[in-house]
Length: 162
Image (cartoon, rainbow, N blue to C red; front, side, top):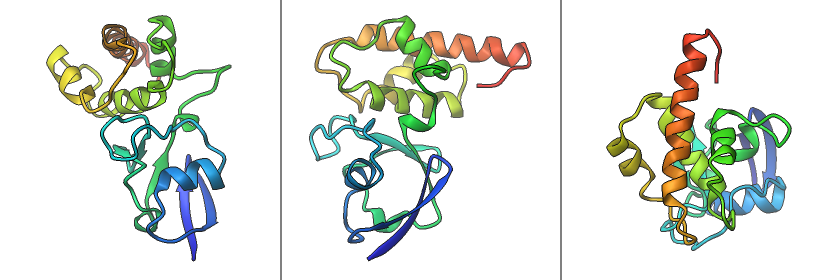
């Protein structure tokens, strides 16, 4: 079946069954490998992407439900040469150890900061708890979200944008 989806601001047409997980389409058809296959059950968050600005598990989301919706992946935030504020904060805090969870963590953090640029410690912890880091870098991840929040606030005061 032919399915049209918008990913990172670009329209794509893919051949896939409607119940194919978005994760497979992103990785196999569109060659966007930032979202990772972790558990396949929506329990780890390695596959987190945004749909219409909300973080979702792409391993559980059928591509057939995405007509007319906007998908954003880690590749749509920034690049190695020019990371966005959240990506840069994760780099600065050395939040990645093995790196497997980090794209999902960044996408979840970005969704929170897009909605609430100045979250409390509790709000960050609650929002981030559905994404797991098996290496145990949770403290650095929390510091990265706080750093990104401060940077966003500073950029906003200076008239800049995320």
